[in-house]
Amino acid sequence: PNDTNRIDYVTIASTGDAADFGDLTDARHGGPGVSSPTRAICMGGYDGSAYVDVIDYVTIATTGNAADFGDLTAAKSAGTGVSSGIRAVAIGGVGSPAIVNTMDFVTIATTGNATDFGDTVAPYEHTGSVNNSIRGVICGARTPSYLNILESITIATTGNSTDFGDAVNLPFSLASGASPTRGIFAGGSIPTS
Image 1: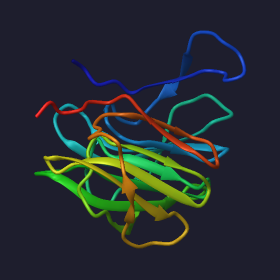
Image 2 (image 1 turned 180 degrees about the vertical axis):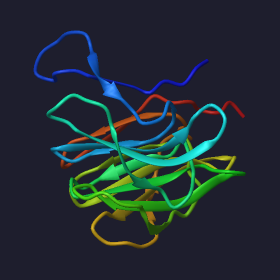
Image 3 (image 1 turned 60 degrees about the vertical axis):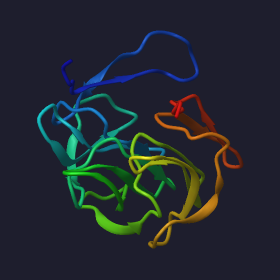
């Protein structure tokens, strides 16, 4: 029932329990996380009483508390994010008062406030996304109706998303992962009506 500011880490090459990395600047949930090979970023979220626009970052190789990176263009939570390793894009989410279709971007290696990237075709909340160094693909939307759409963006350039295809189901709150050539969307909630 309580939001946390805790950051945990694991060493991917070996099995074992997570260990404490440090703390976010604010206890919250629902902010998408993205990274480059050296830096990880948490964008926005909900702190138990309000949507926040805070962007935090850490240097992945060293443990310690997160530092303030800047702010999103608007406070929102429950969106998704993609990263080319150079640029990070925060996609959709829930703001006040509704689900939004906005996208913001930052350059990961530098700090500062986010800039408008463009808009998605549909508003996104609790959705999945995959990316390689060139393209980001977003799966499923809730407007509040469930949609099986797939949309894509070219991460290096700004602009609105474009249609990529359709998902098999009407996914919501799903997991996702990718290699440089293939993206996978797994699980999630599928409406019964």
